Length: 416
Image (cartoon, rainbow, N blue to C red; front, top):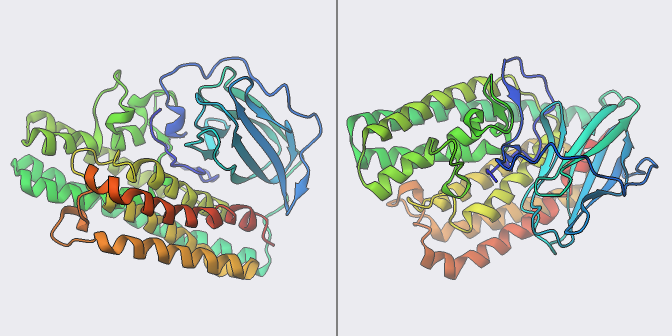
């Protein structure tokens, strides 16, 4: 499966005034089985009950039944999906979709792990849960009625202001990424390997800070499942999710040439030029995206899942070993999303706010011993030897942050 993306814990539910369609990289699987018959026959006909201001829907992944809902419908408004992977080794991801848009997503759903949640505010209509790898991958889900107008109370107003501030953060990072990759392209064009390596390490953090918000765009003329038009794939694919039909592209294609090949070829120059073009397209697209408070919360959780799944394991920067720089950038992006929610969340649940703040501090402090100004990206290389001795303790710190952070989405989605 191409990485999403988690990437998109939630594709923001705003209109994007561009000709590109929104989707998620997780739906760009080349498996081609997304059109199988819909499932969900085990779901109750009764609408999901509302608790804590959100309708509660349970999703169970099993080796026998695939992707099963406990309720096939819910009233309009905030809906919290709680996903448990009982024993389904073939299913590691679930997406809530509508009109080729990802409204919520969870990845890395290994059997036996604790249940995970995401919350989305939904209007009446037809939706589907997409469970790639299940015998029946598309499970219909119906939302009845009309969502209430957005709350205008003091807490909701503060949260809404936070989303505007976060949008500026995303837009600025996207613009800075274009500039940074321009420097990478210039170094590659000159054939300067050392300068290109430095520029590569300098450009990566911008994408990693905002990847949960920018991983869902498909170029015009391409279907959502075609990686040839999936901007996230074209910009940030890894060797572990290489689509043979589409081949190498983006950051990691350049990385491979610089570190494994140790030289710049005409193909490297082509990769760098294409990367610069694609991030320019991406930077224009994100300007049209607006966010809901739960988008920020879901996105922050998604960035931490990226840390646990790819950075901790050394899968992201296989050749340069600058994974800890990516790790720190994912955490920074999550922390910024939380920071923009914090004034409103403080009104909702001061204790949870304090707990999340403390755990963010613990994670950032945990990275301090690995900082190294002499190394590319500002951190020690995340080699196999260092991972063997230190990965578990870093993962434990991130997990302690993930647990309280996962509670935020429903709270901010239901705030008045």
